[in-house]
Amino acid sequence: MEKAFREAIEDIKSEIVLKEVVERLEGRDIEGAIAALHIDPAAFRPLSEAIRTAFNSGGLLVAKNMPRLSDPAGGRVVFRWDVQNQRAEQIIREASSKMITHVTEDTKQMARERIEAGYAKGQGPNTIALDIAGRVNRITGRREGGLLGMTSQLARTVENARTALLSGDVEGVKHYLTLTRRDKRFDRQVAKAIREGKPLPADAVQKITGRLADRYVQLRAQTIARTETQSSVHAAKHEAYQQGLDRAGRDASMVTRRWRSVGDGRVRHTHQVLNAEEVTGMDLPFQSPSGAMMRFPGDTSLGAGAAEIIGCRCHVEYNFGFAEEYARSRGR
Image (cartoon, rainbow, N blue to C red; front, side, top):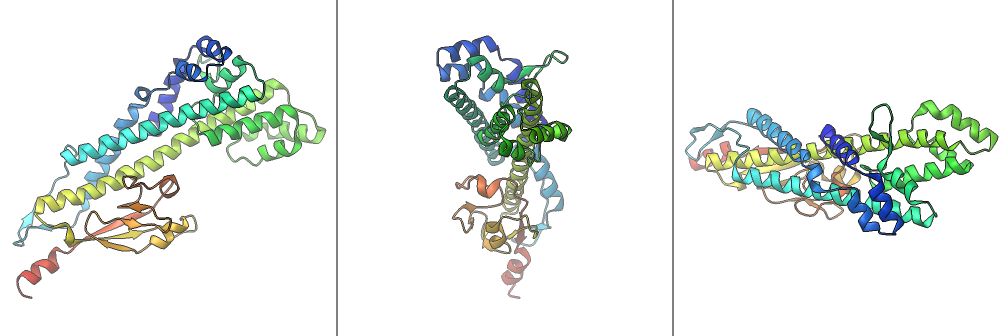
């Protein structure tokens, strides 16, 4: 999925005709400039296949390790994961559509904010366009160092670093040296500028911020991949157990689900609180202290936001009560 996202961004960059973007920026046509960047959902379609692959892999793994199923009479039930189940197909479609829409609009919003910030600083259309799209590497023929592909927050970090390095603002330059994604090969050059109290040459700043931008796009790709892969796998697990119930002719009330966090210091507080919480059935959600409702980690279908989803490493245990129910039916 990380590869699919990065290839989508490369594809968008490769189709940009800088002259078209600059012409619209010269006319102060922000939406026209964004349209000229050709940031559309079709560019991110490969992510749909990545989601399907993760979802199917998760379902197959769960089916392989699922506890023995039995029908109401106690007979053995053979269960096979079906990724083409109508409900499973709908889950994949909705997850893909939601993610692609979010990534598309988020990318457009980043470009919009960068254009507005550029105008506010008095920057020229060519500078704004190049900062967004990146500059063409004469050797590879590809655009490098552009802001396309990162979130607005990451883009602001790059722009703040660029401003500090060009102006010689000591505090701003020192802050740049705290960024974990910076290219440390430039640290000696940056440290020298701090000691001398001078700004760095424009070509050096271009290289430094270009590398930072590329690494932030990589970070975004990794974050999306981790989050969406985990969400897809958990959704597949939930669907696999639902398919198992359907196959066995059993009621969902015979299932209990227990939230499990990984138990280390990196677990968000709300999920520490959820640890060991148990609910009955397949539809009853877990409720986070934040108020967010989730049937499983990564579930956004009930409105849970990024604060509850990104980077989550929790999982849910599913337990069937078939044996107990069968025993009760026999009067034991």
